[in-house]
Amino acid sequence: MIKNFLNKLPKKQGKSAESRDGGSSALSSNSSTSSRSNSASSARSGNVNSTGTNSNQNSGVNHGNKLQDPLHNKANGSSPPVPYEALPGFRDVPSAEKQNLFIRKLSMCCVVFDFTDPTKHLKEKDIKRQTLVELVDYVSSANGKFSDVVLQEIVRVVSTNLFRTLSTQPRENKVLEGLDVEEEEPLMDPAWPHLQIVYEFLLRFVTSPETDAKLAKRYIDHAFILRLLDLFDSEDPREREYLKTVLHRIYGKFMVHRPFIRKTINNIFYRFIFETEKHNGIAELLEILGSIINGFALPLKEEHKLFLVRALIPLHKPKCIPMYHQQLTYSITQFVEKDCKLADTVIRGLLKYWPVTNSSKEVMFLGELEEVLEATQAPEFQRCMVPLFRQIGRCMSSSHFQVAERALFLWNNDHIENLIKQNRRVILPIIFPALEKNARNHWNQAVHSLTLNVRKIFSDVDPELFEECLLKFQEDEGREEEDKVKREATWRRLEEIAISKGASSEAVVVPRKAMLPLSG
Image (cartoon, rainbow, N blue to C red):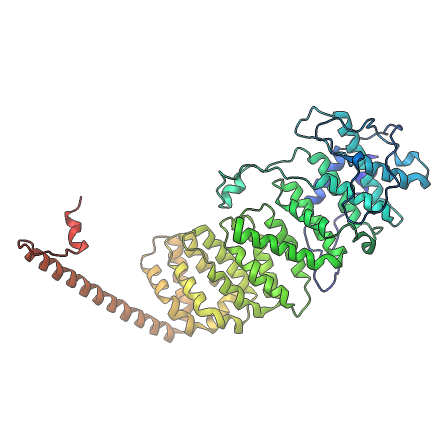
């Protein structure tokens, strides 16, 4: 049976066209596929026992996932319903009885065991795991539309097993600086051997052609989706990978739920940005959104632009941005590629949240800025180039060599270099002081060499403008020197006045600079 299960694992799916609200299938599911294979390989082969118990097959239809049945209470370490024995295999019953057996197996899997104690209910856990594998195999090979009763039971077994209080590690000692969090060992759920098969079962059910979206939407409803999204805060990365794939498939199949899914993800982001700054699944949610944004039709709806301004751009604010910056950058650039007029909005948003004291974060921002500028056209570039190159000039003259180096690397991009050349009369006067100071006395040799290359680019393209900027810089430098001499002369006069009146009884305000030689 295990060979059948492995053979029926879904192969990597190609891109599928979806509707105008988005839903491109570009989302990567490699990790999901590998975890599915692990699930299959861990299942035991062999026939199950033919004895079993009758379950509540003919339960009434109850829309949603609010079905309650005292027969299916959670075990939580206590004794499971007796007897808890394996039911016959699907191959051992006639075709006419397979659906009833399927429902009985679903009911049997509504018992949840306590995995915190690995010594309890070993036999029952193994029976349930084998039964779950059989359910995955049955859903994968189904050749008839799932009935209303079956849909209800499927959603019930999924809800019973997946929707739970998440285990968490103490957050008090965590330093939310991204890299520190990544170095910590993630919390692995001890129940994963069963949870993984339940996720695989849900994924096969959602993607099955026998699942009628119009009928299933009554059970995979807003309450179900809301609880599924709550699970994205799981600390187990394997669970988040499965959730990412499952939610993306739900978004693609259930068009009626798309606005609700986007709105709920927005609310998760708002709570993360403005309240907690604590959530484990931001990267996975952004990966889903990147695929959704890729499928947006043009012209972009106003609600999508508001999402960019109110949620995506403010995601640059939290300290733990390194954990999801790659996915955030992809989503941001997708917007700019869809509508180049949004480049000005995005760049000004980056400048608003530009880090002041975090050099590693500055390097990330400069990398994202390059990707945005790559998709920016001349009109949008001209609207924001003055504040943009004031910030780039500050980065170029940074004493942190990685920041200065990353800013100077912008000239290695042909598209950005052409934009700068076209607008050199505005840009060069802004950044020339940084170039000149770097060329004279920057401590890092790589930054010094890159600076000379950039100076040569401007000098070759427009030597007259370069000379004008050089003369102005020298004039400004001369004025600064004169101001410095005047300030020092003023301080000396004040010191002399203070010394001359020191012997008298008059109160004298002594400048701080005059006190410095007396200290220490």
